[in-house]
Image (cartoon, rainbow over all chains, first blue to last red; front, side, top):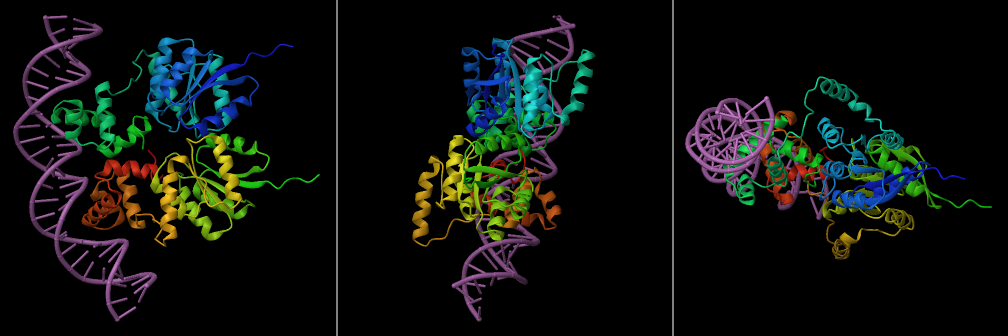
Length: 219
Length: 219
DNA sequence: CCGCCCATGGGGGAAGACACCGATCTTCGA
DNA sequence: TCGAAGATCGGTGTCTTCCCCCATGGGCGG
């Protein structure tokens, strides 16, 4: 008898208990098989490069490298590898970032577990994107814009700005951040202002929640 | 043949995917059986009152009622029901709050899945507490203090202060909070100051992360 | 080459956050 | 009944945040 070819999956999430649960869900399917597990983004990249895997399922928020960063890195180094982003949050921004990072799907942890299984199959069939119902409208917008040749919404923040966001969300004052980055307090404040304007936020509290959602800092 | 009596478990977590994973882990054990699932704290309380369950596993951070609130409520209404707290964070404060809420165990999502199974069994055997290794020292402190008749560290914040924390972490200014709670701005600022002092924090950013860890607000 | 974005730096000022001081009133348990 | 704790409100003052304005230099694409 022939053994059906299973999709070999790399599962990356920083919570072993969650990982184990997802693994059981996936392994229960005849066509799916988890062959590797990673606890952070960097480990995920290493394992994906050294192991025979067809699909990487990455949690958005992970230590060292976030899922988005890991996905972008993997797309660069192994373009044929499919990736699925797994997220706690139904956020337009991450969704587009996931698209940009080359992910083949974006699945919410608040979705039914069967949705993840379907997302895996869709990704392996080469279907461009399986998405939660809540962001269906975003997809249409995206496709519209893409068909008109408009730019894909990129990460609105520059690398330097991301550093500032991280430090702000860790509770540091402008003075401390200036000292850390070895720039003037004025520059820090300029960055912070610019960031708030870009994101449509008004203060460090909203920015903190944004940083946590993005996995830039731990709560 | 006799059917061994299984521990009937209520599983409460706001992420269906996580819930499903935990369910598979638990149902794989011969002596454990998940008989009900809840997506928030209030639903968990309702189900625990209307269903024959022996043990409730509650995620700390859930909508409507947090796991800690739900546990306290259940202890009041069904003292014989055992509860296990499930948390993303290895925090001394929650740990003690879980104790105070009458939980029989505190398990981290970053622990191995088998730890959860062991925690279930320990809870049903009536053992006082199964704990992650990281908080073992805290347990000793706690037992020491308890044996000397000292007060169990309670929730440091009053109900009113919790309201303020929630609103602060949602990004509202003192003026807005004052308007919401129909008190003066001065009182809001007094509460906030008092909260920061109690928790040993310096500003709204740290307070925001605290509120998220406690499940008072969504990131 | 010129405009645009990024990163850097600064002045000034309004508003908010935060600390420290004071107070009254209620509730609740010892 | 007395004290402790919570909730309420006020003044004063300092520091930070946040928003305007400004400028310079480097890189990059049209």
